[in-house]
Amino acid sequence: MAFELFDFKNQPITFGDLDNKAFWCRHGEKQEEAFIKAFTSLQQQKRVKSDEILAIHPSKHSNPYHPDLIINNQFIGEVKTKNSPLFMANTYGINPQFALTMDLKDSFNYERLLNNGTDITIYIWVKWEAMIMKTKYNQYRVKQLAGVWRTPFSTLREHELKSPPPIHWYKEPFRKPPEYSVSDEQHNVWVNELINFEPRLLDHNSYSVKNITSKGYSNDKNQLYTSGHSSCSYVFDLSNSDVFTELYSNVLR
Image 1: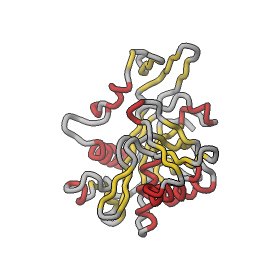
Image 2: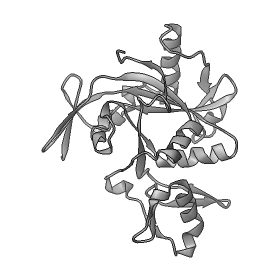
Image 3: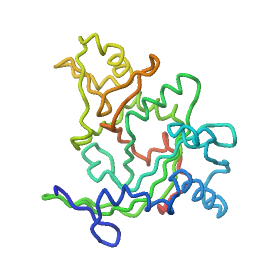
Image 4: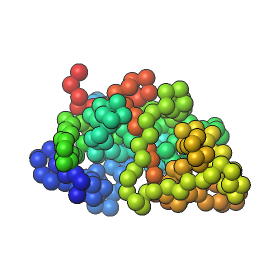
């Protein structure tokens, strides 16, 4: 193994452990349900700076791809749960204590909704479970962090366009994305969508475009969709109050 992870009791831990939803949920409970319970509890304790009423969106029951939440019986929301920091975020100029990764494919999909008049509210629910990453040459450490942040996607997208955040490419082989030549007419429509969304996907030396998921794209009734595992993520700084509103955290001010 190229690295080792340790939790806040200094016990070995794996990313497989972190992916286990038992960290977040009781048996049979979904992450978005666990978030609503935690959020409501914080409201009742007057520890969260929000009076919004959150519930599972009714369409989620029949369509698992639908955004998670309905807010005040009117607006649409999504929950992003994070339990492991990007320990090497310093390589992108971001403190790993507050580094947030969010898949490009999510922004791609949310932008489509935004262009159709729906501005999703994103809630980021953080509870670091991993404290230390050890590699052969370095050791990275974060302090405990638990909190909830919120941002409208329109604000996040404006930030992506005006101050493009770093792009982190995942190294796992199963996440490797296909690449398309800009001269390949077969994929011309998709290539243009990718470039319009994120111009940095275009390699100006090879004139090829990297996809943002492992299996390229699919076509359903003349609508193109990302397909496969996510290949890359943006790296944001949760402490940037111009983008993210802190609703609750255990950070001492």
